[in-house]
Length: 162
Image (cartoon, rainbow, N blue to C red):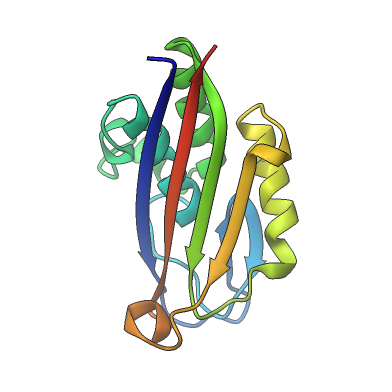
């Protein structure tokens, strides 16, 4: 097969408010009143993207490759995890055709950070920025994201045989 499609989804909840809190989304640090709770850096966007890449190749999910029971991954940058997943994609003879990522959160506002996120992801995936789409939406105050309890992300990837 010359193309493969994968999708991914991830969620992380917010922790308690902290004066100097930041979150990491798409490898970019963003100031926010509450940190994300996670074993790694809690980068919900990269986690969903990794799941989509792994799913396209029927390689399981991020938890199978980087279990939260393994102390090696405590606090790790998810960009490093993405590099490892990208290596698996290349080893199997594929490359990213494109990805479309949708962040779901009431806050913070992601629009000022979208270009930096796209550039960081393109670099990690060894591809052009034109192949990386990042969008953000709210849920109009509905659900856990609307109540500002956490962030979710949907990811879709198309892989092409090299």
